[in-house]
Image (cartoon, rainbow, N blue to C red; front, top):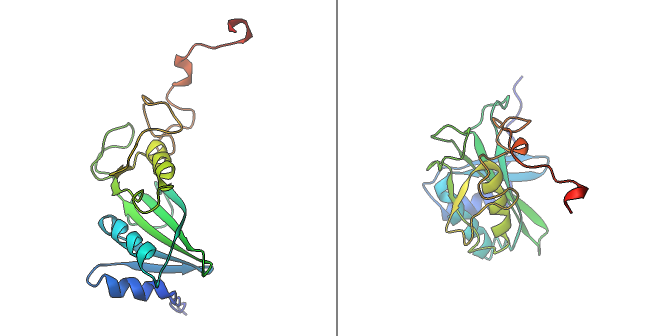
Length: 186
């Protein structure tokens, strides 16, 4: 016996479909959390509508998350995902926008892959600046029109993006290249 299709009743699904006719979306709900999966090119427009549309009023950016789905047991649309978590404080309503990116170049280094670009949302939520910098530093996903896109957790010349799942657990000998500093050096 097949399971019944989930009931997708979040009001934002209908509003976004109405505002963006002809664009393809996927909608999911799991444990009361609603997620809209969008094309990378549509993400900024949809997030802008969610913030500025009075019926939506998602005025708070909770977080931006980057995920690497390499060797994930279930089928995904792309290897990397970026998820924006937005909240309407007046309604206490949280909504998730997710997009997938698939690299076009090998991911074992720091190559500037044109397939791993998204539009920055710092024009909508200035607090997105550090979140986007972290995703860039850890996963190598770059954000167009970001005011200061540079590494935030590793040094500028770091030779990789350490949260990519093809990055070696012990690193690539970066630690062995530095002089050990002890108390006698102070």
